Image 1 (cartoon, rainbow, N blue to C red):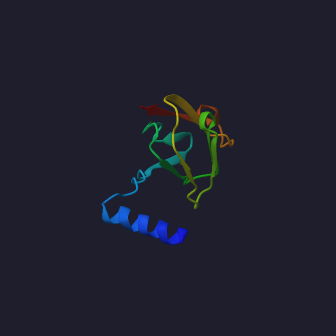
Image 2 (cartoon, one colour; image 1 turned 90 degrees about the vertical axis):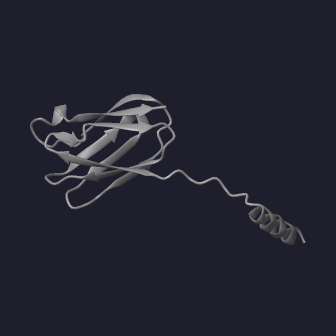
Image 3 (cartoon, rainbow, N blue to C red; image 1 turned 180 degrees about the vertical axis):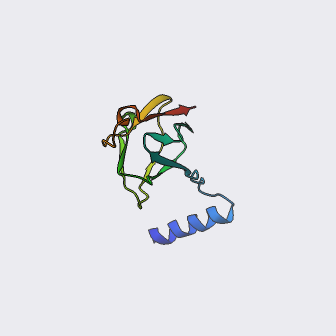
Length: 116
């Protein structure tokens, strides 16, 4: 009996035009790791907007580390790793390569800006 009541309530809600809130679309940001830079080197996102970071490295294995959001990925040539997250704080945050990729590695970093 309870299941029938729930089904009737759901049907009534649909008939009344009540809809579930739409999920925000994920924004896809492609990041290419090259010796010795991330392209783009600066990324701006909105707080609360779901995002997928998609990586490529045409040369050698690289790393991506965004410690303020506890995000990390290995970037291997021929593979496309993806990190899904929703920024929950505003500010500017540094991301860096955390796998030694040669002379110049220590300067391989970028900035993520999260705005309200």
